[in-house]
Amino acid sequence: MFLSIIVINTFAQKRNESKSPIIGSWKFTRQSTLNDFQKVFKEKSYQAELFTFSGNQTFKHEFVDASEQVIKVLKGKWKIANDKIQIKYADVDYEVYIDYFFLESDLVLGQNFSHVIFKKLDNEERNLTMK
Image 1 (cartoon, helix red, strand yellow):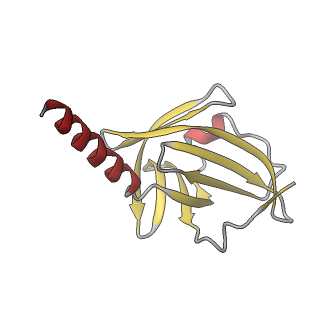
Image 2 (image 1 turned 180 degrees about the vertical axis):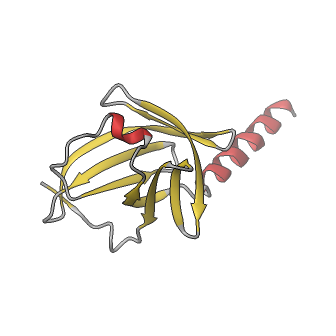
């Protein structure tokens, strides 16, 4: 009996994680003058940034050039806790634990005058090739 409760609870948690509105690919659209992501990503040799949050709580942060070629990929883990998202990079020593919310269909990381905004991409927009 106890084992079946654990299995059901684990299944329910995994099902809820897979339905998270965070999951999917997001393209950077705009940011406030100051935000938590500027501390690490100062270079501007790229044209666009994409975040892909997966259901297994991993992510890819991709940097894309003007010809839509991925020129750099950073990976890590993410999780939701207390209405905040924790994003921990594996490739660089950096972690953020910030508020997140949705403004219409856009994902906002941060709050007030310290935020980054992403637009959700569909599958066609997500088709990029590695350089």
